[in-house]
Length: 282
Image (cartoon, rainbow, N blue to C red; front, top):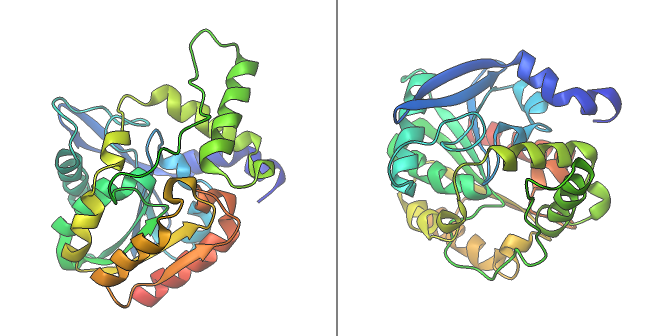
């Protein structure tokens, strides 16, 4: 995707989306839907929103109904009152899914990074309705080495130019393998998402929630990783062994030379591989 379409993709997707709201404590959780066909639910990462999937929605929505929520306390969704535990967020997510998707229909769940934590909670609760559960640069496998050295906090007093330089640095450190792949759209997304984040997801990302939930999920379990994902450095083989231990038939893809935000940095290759997984599990 290049040129004007990439520059305007967020506007195009927003205008094309059907927006649905479900309860989130005393507030609302915001969902966006595109396309027709079997439902694929895409759950974004920490300090993120639905736009983590902006380079995947068009391709997937040609064959599926794509549903992308903003998790509680992130994006357009309100932060619920009380402690934001994996269980609590998972309950809100599950209750929303039961409203957004016909209760008689099956679905697929794809989870990026922190999104795997509440996503795995929902997959357990939804049982046989979930046809596939795909981990994408997933967190929730327990403590890991610190991957945030070199990140710089974006401060209110920074002017726009410094904010963009800082956001680009943070994307290069954490999200991308090749700095040349950090484009203006990625910087725009990073700035918009961090400005709206009212929930710190890191403690839940470092939990072992996903590891504990994997054996309880009825669906086909799959995984897609960037080979240069700093959040999983030195641990991909161990995590894949856990996935295979829970589901010996799991499909696992490691994309060489790609970083944490694999579905953005290598969007075309990711879309092809993920579509194949969805079709085989449908």
